[in-house]
Amino acid sequence: MTASSAIDPLRICLVANSRFPIGEPFTGGLESMTWHLARELIRRGHEVAVFAAPGSDPTLGVVELAVDALPDHAGRHDHGAPPYVELAEHHAYLALMLELAAAGDRFDVLHNNSLHYLPVAMARSLPMPMLTTLHTPPLWWLESAVRLDGGTSTFAAVSRFTAASWASITPSTCVLNGIDVTAWPTGRGGGHAVWSGRLVAEKAPHDAVVAARLAGIPIVLAGPILDLDYFRSEVEPLLGGDAMYAGHLAQSELAALVGSSSVAAVTPAWDEPYGLVAAEALSCGTPVAAYARGGLPEVLTDDTGRLAPAGDVRLLAGAMRDALELDRGRCREHALAHLSLERMVDRYEQLYSEVRPGRLAA
Image (cartoon, rainbow, N blue to C red; front, side, top):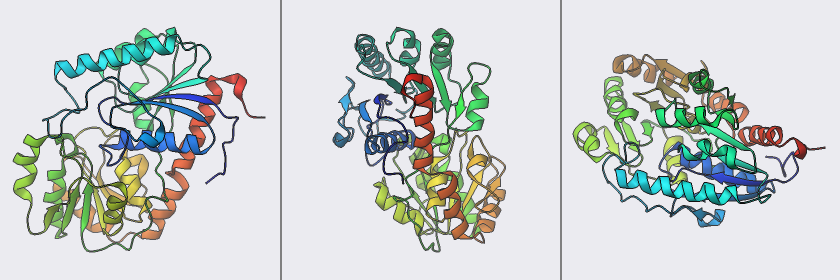
């Protein structure tokens, strides 16, 4: 990785999602991406202020947003949160945006990495330019804020698919998410498959278990249970024998599990905006079998994975068997060349410079 930034040091305000802490064990790809982005920007010499949920990594010097941490296993609380949570988030972001509106020249750029509408809706009140990363297909509340923004902000999208989804609402620059390839080292593979991520219905881990069983491959699931009702009704009855749940693992533990797996299954039941778990698997040299939804086809190549039509567990089982034959070295090479944290942060630095023209490197 580069020893320092390619541009002059910037004072960056990084606004995170308030719903989950930015720290290990990561709840999902958004939290992981934000943590790694902040760490790499700091390493490159930028001054970074991270505004994030309570319980976030204290080594980032986080300024905690004024929201209560959600209890574990509180039902489906990553989408459709209770009204009191939504109101608390609204007030937390409102207080932050009012503070930033009076910040003067404290920051050179604000990078909005949240899913909330208020940072975008209030962008024109800020004394610094804003770059917002789009992590989802258009959501009505965020779409409304983008229209209200009226062209004040600059937007990035985590995949070409996501950029295309937003194209009728706002233009955006594609910046593929990146992973720390040193934290996801090459593994030897093994006899079992792996599935990792949030255990919720739109990630469909139950499909991964069924497909693995059809393929005759044992499988291990890992990740946080965010929808306990779904887990108990759809996943838990499938466990046992050739399918087990390993829990919510720290990144190093998850990397060891993924690296020791023969194939990674990725089974979105929605249009996955990117698919960070696929990039993590490839960094470990583990080929991927996935549903061809959303941004996932952009992460994989013929040398690194096999795709199946969305929801077709029989064809996914065939994709898993086929992926076993792929070369692990080529999977790792693809991650190094195209999916790294360094490449992602290089691109964000360029975008910071573009929204702040006076700060271009010599």
